[in-house]
Length: 221
Figure 1 (cartoon, one colour):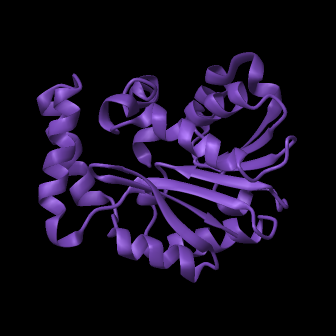
Figure 2 (cartoon, rainbow, N blue to C red):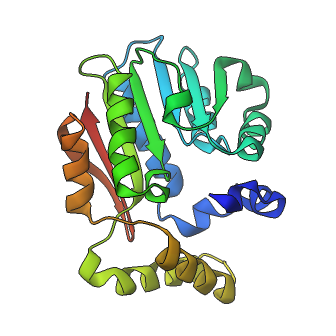
């Protein structure tokens, strides 16, 4: 997460996800629609990894009666979220820290996009448990992040770099990102990710998104 405290990395943040994550904008809209299926009109939604504010902007623009609590460990990324939201920021409370710094809720739904792959397995399991504890019974939880077969890790990360290059990222930068991800991110397999959700108490775990090295699931508290 250190990169998200670097001013240059923060400044580039809004430009990179659409070029590195296949179907990024559509994935955000799908997450919003999956929440909207089951939350009340005036839903309270928890957003874990809210720095940057990209998904918050999609949600606030699409659902004018929802309110949000966003949590992120990077103060710089939270400031970027405030700038991204602009005059929509008054519907979102932002909290610096990890899941333990989130309000107790109960929330009508929760979202965690491109965040859990930064967290080691044991802490990821605890984080999922803490998210579930803050949700109303039956509330939807939407999650998406790196998730690849472990026996094909190098192949899929090469495809990740190839997609980024084809999307306009400099080849050297894309290869550097691939190396950093391979060396530092505790990426799990899709089967492990689904198992962690179930172990945390979530039910009805269902895949809704797959884009090269990324997977997304919807489930219920």
